[in-house]
Amino acid sequence: MSEISTFASFDLPEAVLSAVRQAGYESPTPIQAATIPHVLEGRDVIAQAQTGTGKTAAFALPLLARIDIDDPRPQVLVLTPTRELALQVAEAFQTYAANLPELHVLPIYGGQEYGRQLRALRRGVHVVVGTPGRIMDHMRRGTLDLSSLHTLVLDEADEMLRMGFVDDVDWILEQTPAERQVALFSATMPAPIRRIAQRHLRDPEEIKIQVKAATADTVRQRYCLLSPHAKLDALTRILEAEDFEAVILFVRTKTATVELAEKLAARGYAVAPLNGDIPQNQRQRTVEQLKSGRLDVIVATDVAARGLDVQRITHVINYDVPLDTESYVHRIGRTGRAGRSGDAILFVTPREKRLLRAIERATRKAIEPMELPTAETINSQRMAKFQQRISDTLANQDVGFFRELLQQYEQEHNVPALDIAAALATLLQGDEPLLLDEKALRAGPNRERRPANGERMTLKRRSRRDAVEMASYRIEVGRNHGVRPGNIMGAIANEVGLDSRFIGRIDIHDDFSTVDLPDGMPQEVLRTLKKVWVAGRPLNISKA
Ligand SMILES: Nc1ncnc2c1ncn2[C@@H]1O[C@H](COP(=O)(O)OP(=O)(O)OP(=O)(O)O)[C@@H](O)[C@H]1O
Ligand SMILES: [Mg+2]
Image 1 (tube, rainbow, N blue to C red):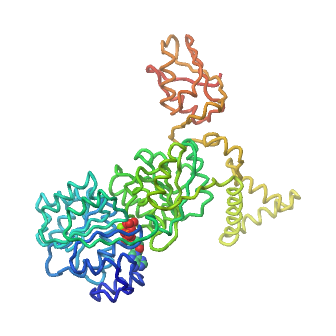
Image 2 (cartoon, rainbow, N blue to C red):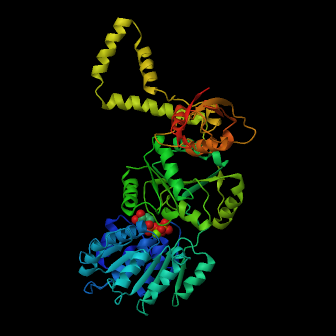
Image 3 (cartoon, protein in one colour):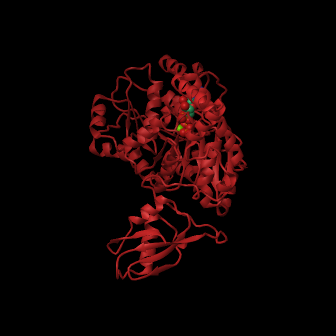
């Protein structure tokens, strides 16, 4: 590996060097130092280095140096697995080309209107960054001319060479000039994929920044062993207790991104889901809002696992365990980037402990066990925050009017000011107690939960030992309704998302039935139940 330690020692044009200085980079990262000279020479490369260590600039800087501005045809094509990443990599090129006003970079990805892409392509672009699908569309339509292409980069190369992408990449490669350079970049490169990679390269320079662990050292890794039904409670405690700026939560399915985002929104978090089914403009807005601070929490599938570079992300929480170790490495790599520190928390259920060990073996790094924050910790945080609110209000707001009002009260009622303040604080607290009760917390997430408007109430299975107290509810469906108990049960379970084990005896009478449901069901659930229709009639339900 070369020992070059300044950007100026590379054979890069001054316009590129000055842009690097403007970006605030002081010295090249190891992968940049090791890769830039080979890419400048036109060699094929396979470059592997930890997440967040500047692989984008490792290919973008030398490739910008080799662009012939007078040729308006695309000379560099970068393929990325996701649209967000295509946009981000194109923006990085633009940053590094800030002092090359004639140089044009174009992101091309699905979900974006063709018209704009076509106009830009017609005007001439030097660098194209895109997802394979849309790139292939343009190639087939003859709107993307690759006859001048001299370099193809696969960012997240192992992902691009996996099933699902590899055929597209092969097809694109076949349509490019035989002499083109191919450069592969990723934080991970499993052996079978590396073998596939070799087929695409000519005498490649293989660069791997050797480090002890596959994960970035700047990320503190912890895991939390819990049963599946305790995840939401654990998450809310962690979000309260951890000092975070922005969090990305990874779940397994698209539906889960939406469901969990809704639950967190109901708890007051600025949160949005991110998955491949969400319209592209919305996906982009979500990433932008996370960057700008309008959003603090994103609940995502693996669509956001790779490449995404958002400085504000201080925490990655794997709410669902990732299915392979590469996914774990990339997911937690969304934090602790460019030398900053970050935190990764992994939720593991007892049945998934095997996966935890597999991750530790593959990354060669132990993950520490984590105790859930206690009610005491959360309470002291809440008290500190409450006191801070008082200080902030006194410092920043005009309290004169209330001061006078309360002075009057103090005199008329002969009550000490401190008692008045305490009464007001109690008022301010409303229905939500400021302090948590550990026992209430232990009882599970559903006891104190209130479903948000339109949200379904879900009672998860508890262990059989946990007895659930039942109360009888009276259901009216009209005389001689002839509805079978099973239908009522099914309709109720379906509508409110109740586990049918929580529905007890159902007695059918002529003009009403009774059903046993868990005692103390929130009013909201009862209201939902009243909207249940069975056999074309609404259920009328009340506590018997
Ligand atoms: N030499 C440098 N000095 C300081 N910061 C840098 C340097 N090079 C890159 N960066 C910054 O580091 C961050 C991470 O860079 P980049 O996104 O290229 O990482 P990566 O290696 O591609 O990570 P991933 O594997 O997650 O895709 C970016 O915000 C980038 O601006
Ligand atoms: Mg990257």
